[in-house]
Image (tube, rainbow, N blue to C red; front, side):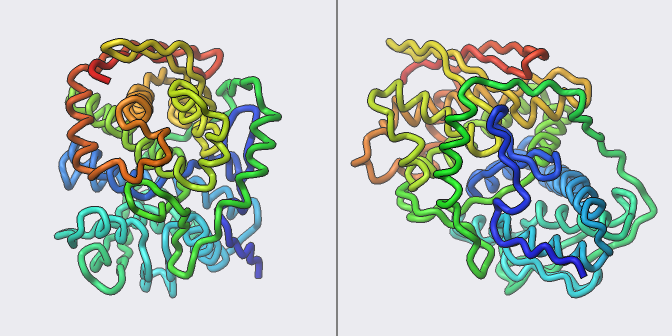
Length: 413
């Protein structure tokens, strides 16, 4: 029996330093903190409505994990049970919790970091199950293991830790339908090699030993001084999960609602991933050369170079009643995904990410290491809404470099 015995989120992972990408068998992967994942899912549901939003999150996860496990099964010549074992190990090693597949009709989440994060953030139980990413993970895994068509298997959650139940119970339904997911062809995409690859490679060698193995409950926890949380929980998911969900929001929601939701997603990503990690031992390495505010701003942006986003570059920064900046993002997983589908991606993620970095640096003075907290999460969102009202930006995309560029200004920072 083949058993890969995955223990760490770095297992099977290749870091491509010239392009700033993380890959498992050619599938782009990315690290986020679970608070971001919570608010990302919430944003999708706010844009599309609870029922439709949950379905998009589920389908995005199903699609991304079906592609991933289909490739892994083929490469290692796994049978169905071996693929289940791989899936359970992968689930835990990526910081998603503990998945127990006794058989296709007896599947449990003994621990779910998304469910636990929901409780930690809202300090209350949900009225509905919250493990839509996990449902999609299991559906994609089973379809790959059983050589089923995407959509043949549908997974429902009948009990959920996030709703106060002791375990999450997943129920598998067999359906006579096929979901036509896009099939990205990354072979047609130009991945631009940005200068500084050797330096990024050496930095990553220092960072890898600082990414811990998950604990018994499948949590990858980094020490962090961010907002008094003490620990930041991170997980690793395919970039295609986020890209597909963002694409669906842009296609299905009202244009202004989609714009707001996706800018907020980029804002959340930086605030709840970059900034929390910035106050961790990893951040101490990545930000050690920052002296001025502008240094900090640039270094904060460059943190994305090590978590699967591709490569950030910051150009001019001007301040004086308003903050104006020029940013570029190469090989971002959403850019690459849409280019592979033959579409031009002008992602709203980038202006949201830039706004978060501006506010973290120039409003919250996050570079001040004596600052113990950024304040309540709700206050951060109130600040976002105020800033969004004064936010203006222009974007362009260069297909020859897989580069998105944004010129952004925001007043009152």
